[in-house]
Image 1 (cartoon, rainbow, N blue to C red):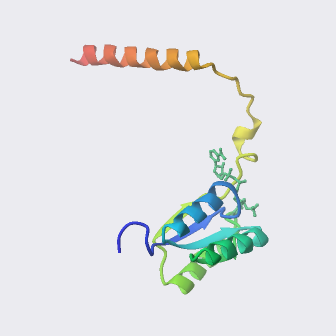
Image 2 (image 1 turned 180 degrees about the horizontal axis):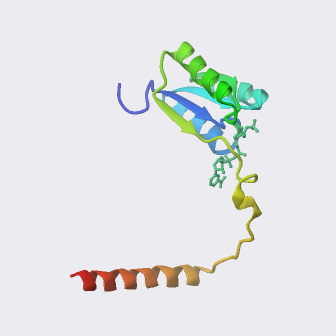
Length: 131
Ligand SMILES: NC(=O)c1ccc[n+]([C@@H]2O[C@H](COP(=O)([O-])OP(=O)(O)OC[C@H]3O[C@@H](n4cnc5c(N)ncnc54)[C@H](OP(=O)(O)O)[C@@H]3O)[C@@H](O)[C@H]2O)c1
């Protein structure tokens, strides 16, 4: 066995967003995916879609803030698939994260270019210093 084919991959936060996309991608490449998130309805719909496309999938409600729930999730994956090879720990919400409270300033492409150029200049200066 090599690559993704037949790997058992447990994915937290698999109900939407990045976790959902990751589950689709990995199942499409032959991994056996174990899906977890609080919302069982979304997991059920995704699991059905993956299975109908020929993938191997199982799912269970999961709350990563409760250790017992995490243990049950991993135990269930091992019971169904025999092992867990990879954990993709994606649970969370970008909207609810600390970033959501920040006031962001839009940076122009020129500012980005200046920052990179400045960094390159200081890097070469450092290289000269140490050389
Ligand atoms: N999107 C971005 O641009 C971005 C950028 C950098 C980092 N991230 C990080 O990547 C992660 C996923 O982002 P996303 O945009 O894909 O978020 P998302 O669409 O809101 O999906 C979050 C997933 O996590 C699940 N979840 C929420 N709380 C959970 C918990 N306590 N236990 C288990 N699962 C839980 C949600 O379940 P339900 O659907 O059942 O609520 C959902 O399936 C977040 O940690 C986020 O901070 C995102």
